[in-house]
Length: 495
Image 1 (cartoon, rainbow, N blue to C red):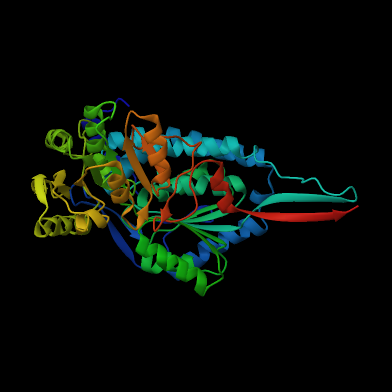
Image 2: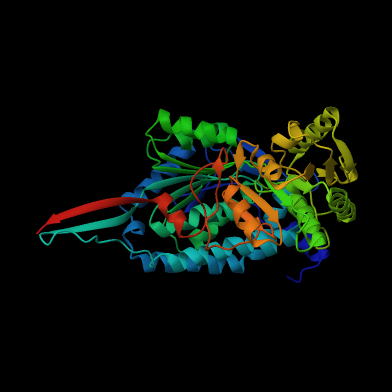
């Protein structure tokens, strides 16, 4: 990407930000109220968002149901669906700068990260599932000579996808692309904090040739629009990424409606274990700092618990603190910015409350903790590091979802594993060691859906992503994601 700060600013002034729902292939203002989309960059109102109520959700679900029951999409040859997803990917690439700018404006992340990381992930996801669509095969088990058995995968129906604001397009893509590849139709509800990029995604998909009703996007709040999708009797599958508390609501909605399948990717309090034999302590410390401060710490997989052996604890902590102090915080539209704004004032307030709690609990603040760049009108926070954190403190137990690191120490490997697993969550974990046996043994012992060894946040679309315990169920990414959006049917033919 070769766009300057001044060019991004000019693009922002001319960017067309529509807050209309995208239902049945057209933009709809809806009949309900509207709310402001406020940029955390400077507090400016970006657009008015049509606030979906039950009427708009009903219309979106009805469009998706028609497209599934009588439309061409689930009846296309898989290769044709794949070609359509590839056309979507091509148009997303053409509109990449506008999409990245929209993400940066609405949720505060640096535009370089939005362009180079988020949009790359979105485009690659549509390409990958477009290429996979005709590679999934059915089964014909060996039976007696007088019978033929077939096991076929059929699209599950209408999918409701509810996604958060921290990676509004990546996480939407992880759900929408495999659902479409499987032959399902989708109603997507983005967070009210980041609706604009998802609404633009819906319009681009229609421009790329998806039939009306195949992908519908509604803006609205969780308690109204999200609840309506969760309770809707014509939604067959619900895929959600967000907090554990809201995940519980979706399970209740399913129980109170049609027992729809609910797939949840929820919170995390991920441990990052650094052993004295780490192959490169400076790299381990640098990665620990990057992991917690990337995306302003607003990541479910953020390595927010740094577990360090006592013999190297001060060395590693000091290195992380130094990097935190050197981090460039600033305008998300400035390509030199390394950490942008938190998503909004309400969330900034919650993170600051957690910092105050950590101080009250007796943890030691090594750096950061204060609001910054107040003159911009935006929601900025200094990168924050605590040490002398006790495992029982709220700092060590509750997901903060901000740039706040808690450093804990251990004396031996067994204690490290106990500390790592001493959480209700089980989304991800990191381990730094030069010993191959230790890497295997500890990876097996950690109760987490993903374990990174001598790295963090690495991987590609070939591997699944998801959690254990109260971090959810089901998997995004990889061919395994198709399992969420298909039904297995057995056909037994007597010959």
